[in-house]
Image 1 (spheres, rainbow, N blue to C red):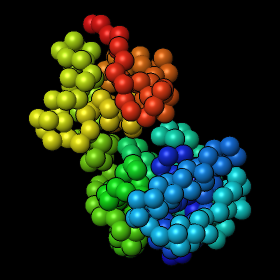
Image 2 (image 1 turned 90 degrees about the horizontal axis):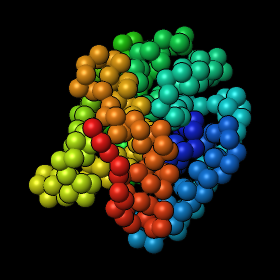
Image 3 (image 1 turned 180 degrees about the horizontal axis):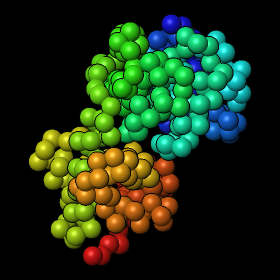
Image 4 (image 1 turned 90 degrees about the vertical axis):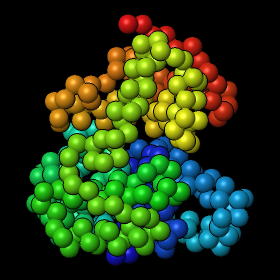
Amino acid sequence: MKNIVVIGAGTMGNGIAHTFAQCGFKVQLIDINETSLKKGLDTISKNLDRMLAKEKISEADKTNTLANISGSTNIEEGVKNADLVVEAATENVDLKLKIFKQLDDICAENTILATNTSSISITEIAAVTNRPGKVIGMHFMNPVPIMKLVEVIRGYNTTDAITNTIMELSKSLGKVPVEVNDYPGFVANRILMPMLNESIETLYNGVAGVEEIDTVMKLGMAHLMGPLQLADFIGLDVCLSILNVMYNGFKNPKYAPCPLLVNMVKAGKLGVKSGEGFYDYSESRKAKKVAVQFSK
């Protein structure tokens, strides 16, 4: 397996492409939006510069990594010789189903189709293809080049051979793959998202403020980042989408998103990506406390 295609040049997509390329794979990064593609490629270069400055890689490593990556806005041309396609588009089920239908039509018969979804059913995605045994989940963690975990999610029809291939491939990237089964939220988000949602509920109910909640979790539970800051980092829109997938999948009210989260997303307060969420990121990357309006 040498030729990797990554669909989507956003935060996760460019991180996945970076990781594969740094490990010697030939990578085609595809995004239908030329501006997004350029931004993704620029991000990879900047991240490599940071690693170089910290002496985590050499100048040769950077040069070789960039040489392994090419970009394209043409999905049909890009996937022709792919051994593996990793879809890393927005966490939207309709979009992912559309992409996988297209990939199934244009990819070679032996191409493995993987999705970086953090919550959507692999079985549902695989069902729109004629190769459900070759469809699998590869849920990388953000930031991809640094975080070791890959959740490898097998759908109902994913074969043992494909699962084993992706497990070994993940190890070759220096990652630690963990095989899980296909239920809403899988393991990581099924545990994480209710905690983030409860932290937002705690704020919404006026129990404590943003910094106070985060401080309790950092100092009391040894978390490296408080839950509200982590939600900002993930993206409040992404958190809302994942919670909705789990709520719809389990029909359990404990997964229902907090009204404060819903309203913040409607208002465009999405966290780091929009410059403001539970903290203000508009002036610098250092989180600054903002007054969050809430009521019950």
